Image (cartoon, rainbow, N blue to C red; front, side, top):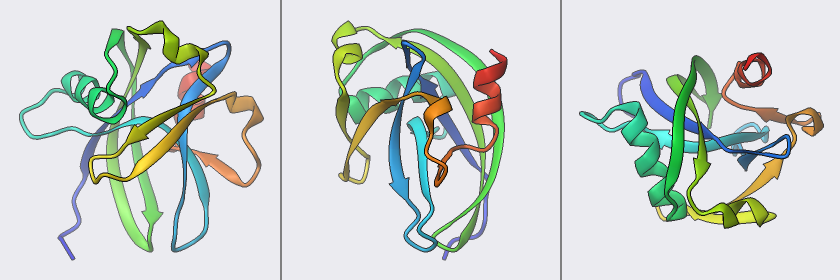
Length: 144
């Protein structure tokens, strides 16, 4: 087990007709379902803006435009029974290839090779047993 540390993350909000693009996952330890926008870790020596461009390119093989920082969140959470702590830069952007907006789901691949499916979600229609993460994201989206 590695020493606890704070991770730097960047996430991107893609909006379309009142919906945002998210992927869904389940905490295997607690069974909690959650949805989160796409993105990931910022690498050492990389700005958060460059990090989100890289993450979307790696995960979806897509280019993004009109990148704009909309806020920063501090996320303290438990996953797989371990305490986690992240500082999350949240961006808004658009897909350069507009065809992404016409897809009900979008296939992607995580850096560990695991595939995932992203889908358009109206945050107001989030299931009661599913969290929108990171903590504070819904308020950030409401305030913008």
